[in-house]
Amino acid sequence: MAKNDGRRRQLADAGLAVLAQEGSRGLTHRAVDAAAGVPTGTTSNYFRSRQALIEGLVERIGERLAPTDDDLRRREGEQPGPALFADYVRDIVRRLTTDRDVTLALFELRLEAARRPEVAAVLGAWQRAGLDADVAFNTGAGLPGGRREIALFHYAIDGLLLDRLTTPIDPDSSTDDAIDALVAGLLGAADASGSEG
Image 1: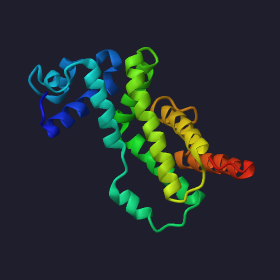
Image 2: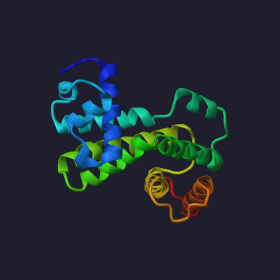
Image 3: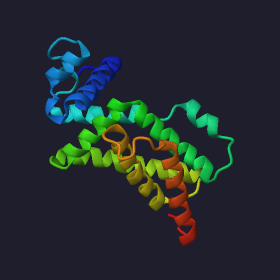
């Protein structure tokens, strides 16, 4: 397998663009070669099978959606609580809506996972690891909410993003207002029930 990490990232980025623009059926090694502007066969040198390509795309999604060190440092000294939690959620939604191709590609993979167990295995493992990391981060940062609330936020953010990136049911509503309402509702419900995760 080829080892050039920069080229591997370039091909994965092209694959995400193909997936976002053409859907799962359009994702082929040749299509990625064309999107990346590389000679035919280059993608298959880096990702030998479609499954290997999908694994590479899932890995690249995680890299592209990760918060920057600056994002994390900027909030380090702030008081833990619902307002800071809402700020983190707004940042997650900002990254997911700004990098539209990545988010649409992720939705395409989620749909393909419903039909193909091998995709479900890769994507499911990645999602569960992401949830575990989010819970650990939340706990380490002293933020409110436990595992149950973090999972509920994942569900809510998925729905909000699907709405915002496709056909919004209320296009004039504010995404930030929706996030604030979710935080108030979910964390308020956790406080009322005494949930600790």
